[in-house]
Image 1 (tube, helix red, strand yellow):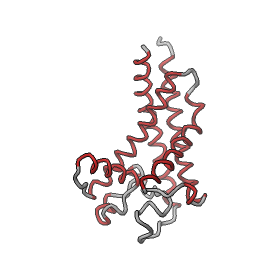
Image 2: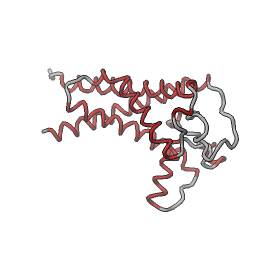
Image 3: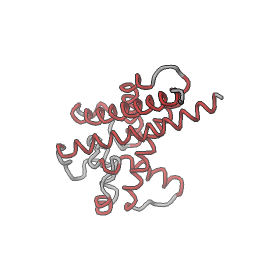
Image 4: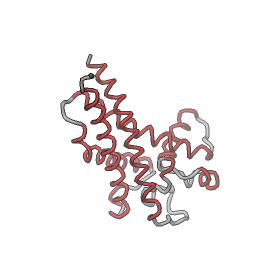
Length: 197
């Protein structure tokens, strides 16, 4: 019984994570017209290591466009694409062509959002607290984890090396993700508890 509740919670959470990821992407899409263009040029060992985290194109889940990836190799690719590339190349021991950067970035971005949602769903299945109460804390936890893990990979700088105006939009996007995920999960839990007529 407990195992089936956890699996059910994980499944609901994955769906809720997809809703949260879509909300986050909508935030980036709405913000895009107001963003300044990123400066081009070699600014460090890795394109994401020395400048603020980029969500330049939210259309593919934080990925650079396929045109950018094809013309610039992996330079224009998102951190999500680089994570996926490293996993693929580590497992297969074969180079991944830059033409797949857009797809790989989207798969990693959406998979990561759904994975976090699954974790929230399993926690919700084991507690009586309503998932909606976790909106800000959940989004903040996902955002903080990015800044703990990605500097280790060299894809981001340590969080204290960014200025607040560089970090603020990314934090807001993750709060949007957390709110979307927790709200969708809360709705699914409520619907699941309502007796059918």
